[in-house]
Image 1 (cartoon, helix red, strand yellow):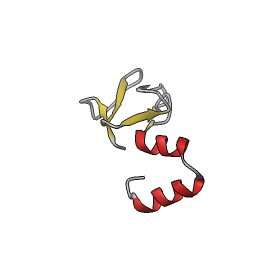
Image 2 (cartoon, rainbow, N blue to C red):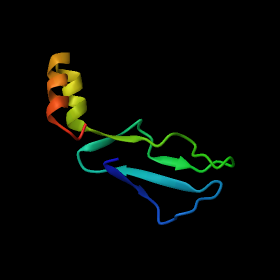
Image 3 (cartoon, rainbow, N blue to C red):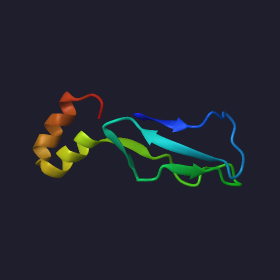
Image 4 (cartoon, rainbow, N blue to C red):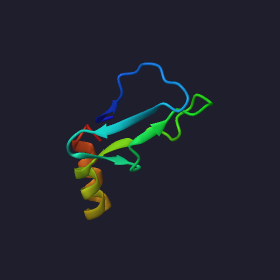
Length: 77
């Protein structure tokens, strides 16, 4: 996940909230850092991913061939 859930709880009840925080160099995707436990027992949204800022920079500024080379050399993707 490259981040952590900010809560000391192990068991959650309806309306309980958790915060998600990414490690340095990563950002939340989607940009949603708080989830709420719903009455159904499900979270209010899917758990966000922590995406590498470097990965996003490369995806936005490289050709498809460059991205494929990067993926093959970096196991953290």
